Length: 112
Picture 1 (cartoon, rainbow, N blue to C red):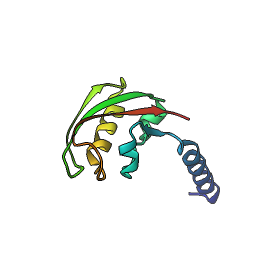
Picture 2 (tube, rainbow, N blue to C red; picture 1 turned 135 degrees about the horizontal axis):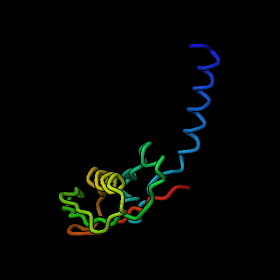
Picture 3 (spheres, rainbow, N blue to C red; picture 1 turned 180 degrees about the vertical axis):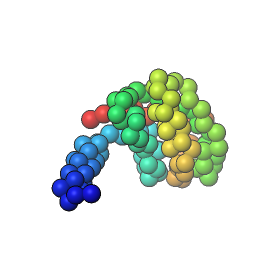
Picture 4 (cartoon, helix red, strand yellow; picture 1 turned 90 degrees about the vertical axis):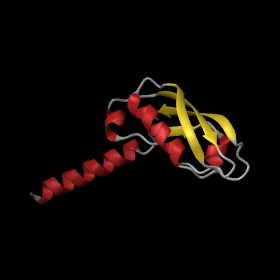
């Protein structure tokens, strides 16, 4: 592999990373944001396909802040975005003060 090709590959990768940084799902729920949970992010395929949409979820929260059940109530229309939203929600541990029981959350997937 020539040094010029390596430099080209590095610069291309760096430029692509900088362009894709602002592509992520924004959380629409203050409890989720306050908990420090990470919003789901685009994978390379959904980013290339420029998929966007709103995913609404219901989730059951116990008194310790753990999500014990979650389901999609309104799809974005894209399976990968829906699944990424569900995974991010299930991985979250809400802080004290979050309302136990069934709650609703929406992720707006947008490219910026």
